[in-house]
Image 1 (cartoon, one colour):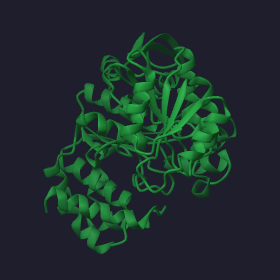
Image 2: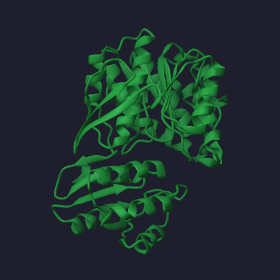
Image 3: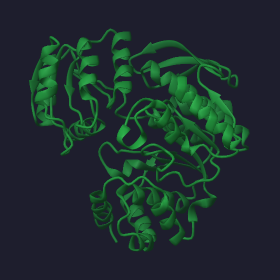
Image 4: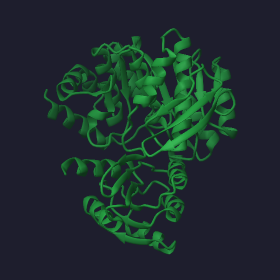
Length: 422
């Protein structure tokens, strides 16, 4: 099959929605003789920061000379971004070849979901590409997520726990912690930034599995240094002697993400897969993670951030306060998200608000957030089409201003696609 056929086959599975559970993915892999089992993996769950932590770990493993796979979701512009080997997206030819190889499993399981098929596809590509270690980001939850098919990862990470997807994961942080902590495995150390009762749940799961747990703020502590528009410096107490480090990512939350990544890299190194300190330093400094407080120079400057829940919005607002920024915002969100709380958090830190429609049927009606911005004293305007919304915001901000695009990764991806067309 060709690339177009492979993508069409994948897109056709979207109609099955989301079905938590491991029976289908286990069955698909069994049909394919469990080809995935020899792959070393790093497994990352959590509410926010999963993708950033994955990107940092993968960059450090690559710098250490290990051929590294990276599987993340969702994509911003094109599906190929989800599956990378040593920083390079899967090509159309590779995508088609991998789809051909997993076709027997697709035929056997015709109602496998989009994410289940994508996960098997990613693992097939990683094995075919000779990957030594793969970094896997959980799609939703952890215990019943399609990525949860490895009995002993090198390390598991649960970045943090906030209320999200409560209809699937439970309506308390403790319940969500139990779901996300389902990736914890016997003998695989846990690294986490969770706190409070959620942390206690994760500790209990680790004890039950006979696994150690290293906790951000208790066992290792990040120390912020200088912050600039294109990066920041920091140090970490409680890990190997890294000395001053730099990441080309902004926001204080990224320092915590980097500390989690370094703690995981320490555990990986201790497992026998060598990650020298210098390689970890170089990897973090090379990390690229588009759409997360990404600054695009211009007149005006653009700031793209995929904050799509209150915890992510808190990190964004903290950055705006820290850098004393008050941009014109292009905002859009999905109906199932707590968009009202996000607007409430964001409004005091923006100058004007252009509310647009996220390009999906799940988009909230832009009139509702626009009305709420106006009620909070911020000029709110509805511009349905995202590209037009961006141009309107740029006109209001002026050449010396800043335009912030936020509220949904889908919106950020749409705007990035429009920027590519310019």
